[in-house]
Image 1: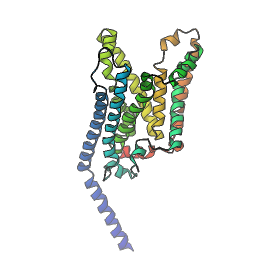
Image 2: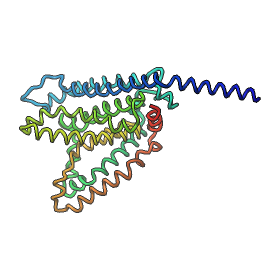
Image 3: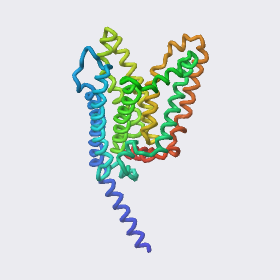
Image 4: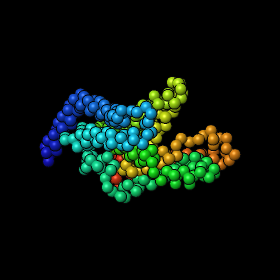
Length: 328
């Protein structure tokens, strides 16, 4: 019995040495190459998405908001979203599995649609939507209160729900759906399942691609504002706002595991627009509105983790993604 235990100990020691020998430089080199390819693909998705908007010759007399231009861009965005699937599919369906996934000891996604958060699972879609919309509404409690006091709240949402123009279809449906699909459903899982970063890096860094996808508005803003200084200030504010929203959307997507939530929150934020801070501060009911801002932010912070608890969301792969990120 002692001899058998000794032989088992020797075999375990040999496996340990073999594992360590095989997981030093070669593994680091492989991970580095995979990370570079994944982040390069993320930038490529951004370039393709923005480039698809300029496939059609621009008619100066019409501009980007002309219904004909908007409808043409719908078609090219569909192509950009299809292209965004390719690098994500290569990672998620890779054989053999990426080294970080193997080291973490987790099972890769059973299907591409599940990994991208678009599987037809009504309960997963519903819980993700309720959590994401609830958190977004809490964060916008101040602006919602402002609109309600001024008697504009009902009109704002009734008008938004009446999708009777190409611009409304773009702002409240197509843009949220296509942007969340490309920058959340494709980019974030690709980075994580390839073992290219931790969950924290995916949440905080991948939205930079989303923010960068809005920088092309600089030329239009410069022409509208009559100078580069004003355009730079506006594009800087837009970049900061889109990146901040991207942090929230990426977090809720990864925690809840379904894309419906981020899409719904994106549409809601587009309907609300940027908060009117100056208007709130100069309002006759300033104390009420400012108080609503404070309460809303406090509720958002307090509810962010509980509302997105993976145990409440049947589509969540959060624990597996955290394990893969730690093994990267």
